[in-house]
Image: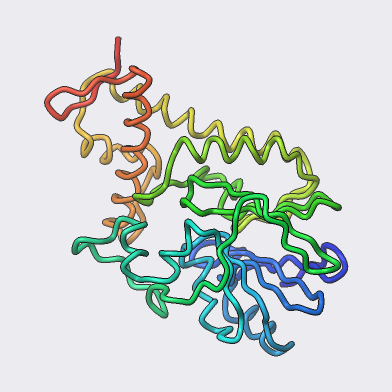
Length: 289
């Protein structure tokens, strides 16, 4: 449940191995009690609450599986990057950022959508000094506009949030996600060359980190290649969605995962159109010969 990384610095593994709807987080005990993300589940949450008051919560981004638990620590200040503060503060903005506005219903989630006070808006390369532990804010957009990673420079420990090195690969299924920004963010973490990487949905990793990040980024190129393969004959966007190029299958609720598939495909198609690898005519896409 709690893995000590450094004195006063703990990795909090989420329930169900940190898989959605849960996530992993961090806890600092340095005079101030600091949590990084709060989606780790009730057993972890109750253990933290039993140990005393939480002073600060840092959210790597606004997604519910990372910020849902904020509400159970009402005494804590909430810190987040300025670009992800609006969807944390407002259900209306949450819907706008995800794409679930204009009558499209977001699936039920225990506790509902966020609507919280964000007390401090963080900036790229800001240094958060908690005494024994210092964390540097690394703005790593793409998954969300204000997604951040946090770097402890002395030991080279990186918490990369939802740049999560999962077998699925990078995720950019919200309207405000950005495929090209995500590519750049992964490259930035490779250049950082951390000694240990912790993520929102995977175990502690301390070997071949740069190689793992490169392989993770390569999934974006593989998706491009699969799309181009399928577009040797012209297809509509809906026909591409039916092929399940990214998700391979649509779990329940299927309507939600079709939306994510479609959103991510649109981002690839926009990129491929810009590279002149794809042409669109009569609402059908086709790869250049």
